[in-house]
Image (tube, rainbow, N blue to C red; front, side, top):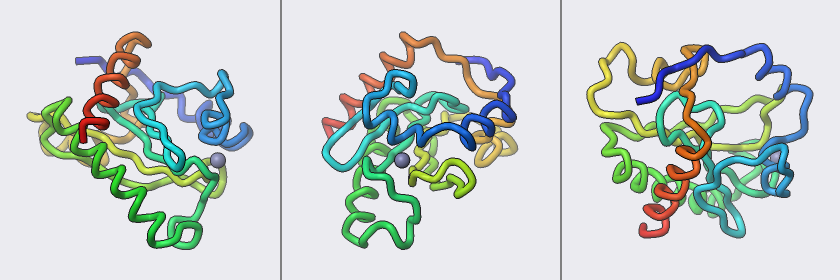
Length: 164
Ligand SMILES: [Zn+2]
Protein backbone atom coordinates (compact mmCIF):
# COMPACT_ATOMS: atom_id res chain seq x y z
CA UNK A 1 0.00 0.00 0.00
CA UNK A 2 1.31 3.46 -0.88
CA UNK A 3 1.03 6.28 1.65
CA UNK A 4 -0.80 9.49 0.79
CA UNK A 5 1.23 12.67 0.45
CA UNK A 6 0.01 16.26 0.64
CA UNK A 7 -1.37 17.58 -2.67
CA UNK A 8 -0.43 21.08 -3.81
CA UNK A 9 -3.88 22.24 -4.91
CA UNK A 10 -2.76 25.81 -5.71
CA UNK A 11 0.01 24.60 -8.07
CA UNK A 12 -2.44 22.19 -9.70
CA UNK A 13 -5.01 24.94 -10.27
CA UNK A 14 -2.27 27.19 -11.66
CA UNK A 15 -1.23 24.50 -14.19
CA UNK A 16 -4.82 23.75 -15.14
CA UNK A 17 -5.78 27.36 -15.70
CA UNK A 18 -2.66 28.59 -17.50
CA UNK A 19 -1.26 25.55 -19.36
CA UNK A 20 -2.39 23.95 -22.61
CA UNK A 21 -4.95 21.11 -22.63
CA UNK A 22 -2.94 18.29 -21.04
CA UNK A 23 -4.99 15.57 -22.75
CA UNK A 24 -4.50 17.04 -26.23
CA UNK A 25 -0.77 17.42 -25.49
CA UNK A 26 -0.59 13.78 -24.35
CA UNK A 27 -2.39 12.67 -27.54
CA UNK A 28 0.10 14.71 -29.60
CA UNK A 29 2.99 12.95 -27.86
CA UNK A 30 4.37 16.03 -26.10
CA UNK A 31 6.90 14.55 -23.63
CA UNK A 32 6.12 17.28 -21.09
CA UNK A 33 2.63 15.78 -20.78
CA UNK A 34 3.53 12.07 -20.86
CA UNK A 35 1.38 9.70 -18.81
CA UNK A 36 1.36 5.96 -18.31
CA UNK A 37 -0.98 4.88 -21.10
CA UNK A 38 -3.20 1.84 -20.53
CA UNK A 39 -4.92 1.78 -23.92
CA UNK A 40 -5.05 3.88 -27.05
CA UNK A 41 -7.10 3.46 -30.21
CA UNK A 42 -8.34 5.77 -32.96
CA UNK A 43 -10.98 7.44 -30.77
CA UNK A 44 -9.92 6.96 -27.17
CA UNK A 45 -6.96 7.24 -24.84
CA UNK A 46 -6.88 5.71 -21.35
CA UNK A 47 -4.08 6.47 -18.91
CA UNK A 48 -3.21 6.46 -15.22
CA UNK A 49 -3.87 9.63 -13.26
CA UNK A 50 -0.75 11.55 -12.28
CA UNK A 51 -2.44 12.36 -8.99
CA UNK A 52 -3.87 9.02 -7.90
CA UNK A 53 -5.77 8.73 -4.67
CA UNK A 54 -6.37 5.02 -5.31
CA UNK A 55 -4.08 2.50 -7.01
CA UNK A 56 -5.21 2.04 -10.61
CA UNK A 57 -6.97 5.42 -10.82
CA UNK A 58 -7.40 5.98 -14.55
CA UNK A 59 -8.86 8.54 -16.95
CA UNK A 60 -10.79 7.64 -20.11
CA UNK A 61 -10.89 10.40 -22.74
CA UNK A 62 -11.97 10.92 -26.32
CA UNK A 63 -8.84 11.80 -28.29
CA UNK A 64 -10.64 14.64 -30.00
CA UNK A 65 -10.97 17.75 -27.88
CA UNK A 66 -14.60 17.53 -26.78
CA UNK A 67 -15.86 19.50 -23.81
CA UNK A 68 -19.58 19.22 -23.26
CA UNK A 69 -20.78 15.72 -22.40
CA UNK A 70 -24.35 16.52 -23.43
CA UNK A 71 -23.71 18.46 -26.62
CA UNK A 72 -20.27 17.55 -27.99
CA UNK A 73 -20.86 13.81 -28.35
CA UNK A 74 -23.48 12.03 -30.39
CA UNK A 75 -25.40 9.30 -28.53
CA UNK A 76 -23.39 6.72 -30.49
CA UNK A 77 -20.07 8.37 -29.56
CA UNK A 78 -21.12 8.54 -25.91
CA UNK A 79 -22.12 4.87 -25.83
CA UNK A 80 -18.90 3.81 -27.57
CA UNK A 81 -16.91 5.73 -24.94
CA UNK A 82 -18.95 4.17 -22.15
CA UNK A 83 -18.29 0.70 -23.56
CA UNK A 84 -14.59 1.43 -22.98
CA UNK A 85 -15.30 2.74 -19.49
CA UNK A 86 -17.06 -0.53 -18.72
CA UNK A 87 -14.29 -2.60 -20.27
CA UNK A 88 -11.78 -0.72 -18.12
CA UNK A 89 -14.00 -1.26 -15.07
CA UNK A 90 -13.89 -5.01 -15.69
CA UNK A 91 -10.11 -4.88 -16.06
CA UNK A 92 -9.68 -2.88 -12.84
CA UNK A 93 -12.02 -5.20 -10.97
CA UNK A 94 -9.86 -8.18 -11.96
CA UNK A 95 -6.43 -6.59 -11.49
CA UNK A 96 -7.17 -5.01 -8.11
CA UNK A 97 -9.87 -7.39 -6.83
CA UNK A 98 -11.79 -4.16 -6.18
CA UNK A 99 -14.78 -3.85 -3.88
CA UNK A 100 -16.37 -1.25 -6.17
CA UNK A 101 -15.46 0.64 -9.33
CA UNK A 102 -16.03 4.38 -9.15
CA UNK A 103 -16.89 6.28 -12.36
CA UNK A 104 -17.41 10.00 -12.70
CA UNK A 105 -16.98 12.85 -15.14
CA UNK A 106 -15.78 16.17 -13.73
CA UNK A 107 -13.62 18.84 -15.36
CA UNK A 108 -14.10 22.58 -15.51
CA UNK A 109 -14.67 25.23 -18.16
CA UNK A 110 -12.20 27.32 -16.18
CA UNK A 111 -9.23 25.14 -16.87
CA UNK A 112 -9.78 21.41 -17.35
CA UNK A 113 -12.15 21.40 -20.27
CA UNK A 114 -11.34 18.24 -22.25
CA UNK A 115 -14.02 15.67 -21.45
CA UNK A 116 -12.73 12.77 -19.35
CA UNK A 117 -14.09 10.03 -17.14
CA UNK A 118 -12.46 9.11 -13.86
CA UNK A 119 -12.49 5.35 -13.31
CA UNK A 120 -11.00 4.11 -10.05
CA UNK A 121 -11.06 0.82 -8.14
CA UNK A 122 -11.91 0.97 -4.43
CA UNK A 123 -9.94 -1.70 -2.55
CA UNK A 124 -11.75 -4.09 -0.25
CA UNK A 125 -11.91 -3.19 3.43
CA UNK A 126 -11.87 0.63 3.28
CA UNK A 127 -14.07 1.99 6.12
CA UNK A 128 -17.31 3.60 4.89
CA UNK A 129 -16.28 7.09 6.08
CA UNK A 130 -13.18 6.87 3.84
CA UNK A 131 -15.04 5.66 0.75
CA UNK A 132 -16.76 7.54 -2.09
CA UNK A 133 -15.68 11.20 -2.43
CA UNK A 134 -13.29 10.91 0.53
CA UNK A 135 -11.42 8.15 -1.32
CA UNK A 136 -11.23 10.17 -4.54
CA UNK A 137 -10.36 13.67 -3.32
CA UNK A 138 -6.78 14.76 -3.99
CA UNK A 139 -7.30 17.29 -1.19
CA UNK A 140 -6.91 14.30 1.15
CA UNK A 141 -3.47 13.65 -0.35
CA UNK A 142 -2.31 11.64 -3.35
CA UNK A 143 -0.45 8.34 -3.45
CA UNK A 144 3.23 8.43 -4.24
CA UNK A 145 3.70 5.50 -6.62
CA UNK A 146 7.20 5.12 -8.15
CA UNK A 147 7.39 5.49 -11.95
CA UNK A 148 8.42 1.86 -12.51
CA UNK A 149 5.43 0.71 -10.47
CA UNK A 150 3.11 3.01 -12.44
CA UNK A 151 4.54 1.61 -15.69
CA UNK A 152 4.00 -1.98 -14.56
CA UNK A 153 0.48 -1.14 -13.40
CA UNK A 154 -0.42 0.45 -16.76
CA UNK A 155 0.85 -2.63 -18.60
CA UNK A 156 -1.06 -5.02 -16.33
CA UNK A 157 -4.31 -3.06 -16.63
CA UNK A 158 -3.73 -2.72 -20.38
CA UNK A 159 -3.36 -6.48 -20.76
CA UNK A 160 -6.56 -7.06 -18.76
CA UNK A 161 -8.34 -4.42 -20.86
CA UNK A 162 -7.18 -6.10 -24.08
CA UNK A 163 -8.39 -9.46 -22.79
CA UNK A 164 -11.86 -7.93 -22.35
ZN1 LIG B 1 -8.01 18.76 -25.25
